[in-house]
Image (cartoon, rainbow, N blue to C red; front, side, top):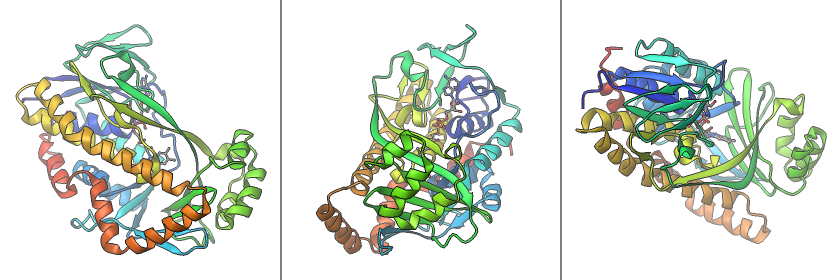
Length: 397
Ligand SMILES: Cc1cc2nc3c(=O)[nH]c(=O)nc-3n(C[C@H](O)[C@H](O)[C@H](O)COP(=O)(O)OP(=O)(O)OC[C@H]3O[C@@H](n4cnc5c(N)ncnc54)[C@H](O)[C@@H]3O)c2cc1C
């Protein structure tokens, strides 16, 4: 299908929305990207990109900038609370550039995508504009009562998506009961290796995101921990971690105030379909998931590439949206299920079950098994994905 002359409104300029907007514009569409925040800056600490997400960013021409600003991870480790290795967390070696993970500050990822949006004549960015609804014919309604007509509306407006809740997407947004803390701390003298520890009180993980900064995340749902978080009591949190997970204490010691921590409730979103009429969902709007597979943002990037790929090759918008749903929804649902399983395993409180879990992980956690699990999480072949993104670019960028 010819995308030139097609008007698309993308709701939400997060990672998924910005990537989709640039992909659409490079394929010929005229895009209005509508973002409720007036600053357009990132909320978040760090993020780990995997080969599928890197493939899309590489195809867009922004991965090299991120490699310069972030940290390439060739290996990370999953450990138990004693520090013993349970399994390697590796990126499969698909091809040069697609054989590692990348740890970056969210702000850096946001900046390179925002620069790509700004450099794209086919994208008009409207900050400070809140979408309140979207009609099946793709008319997007804003909080000011404006009606933005379009040939296609893309809901990239996150877990509480206004496009999704406009109707037409039988959906369930279910709080998982898990809460995560995230933060950036000075890297100096942190002895930790990149990776994750499954402690009795939950998950603690992290990685360097540049020469001076360490990104960490920790689940905060265990009894005591949850109360300390609710009371925003950093000292109590430090005392608790000291008892249950001493290795995490140096991280919390570097946090100056509770306000420097981000606190997120994890919600899982399931939709019976990702499109309705001429509106379609990408990213967390369609499939918010537990962070345990590290695939929320990576999957959002893949969504945009597959959606625009189908629009460019199908005969009609309807056919493209149906193909997109068929190609993406089952694959992402499998990853959501895996993320939930990992979350259940990681948050196991029963010591006997934890012991059994660790024995099983050590037995299965060789490099080959780790490689297979990591490949399944990518959903698509990253090499083909990067080629697709490059092929879609009709602008000669
Ligand atoms: C602790 C934690 C760690 C994580 N780590 C990773 C990781 O390492 N790797 C990974 O791949 N994923 C990770 N994730 C998941 C990842 O953060 C999300 O999946 C990703 O940010 C989703 O991107 P998105 O663009 O779909 O949505 P969002 O990032 O939520 O962006 C939505 C955008 O839409 C805007 N918006 C919302 N409503 C409206 C409206 N009504 N009108 C206009 N604009 C609107 C918002 O302001 C925002 O800019 C993690 C999540 C958590 C909680």
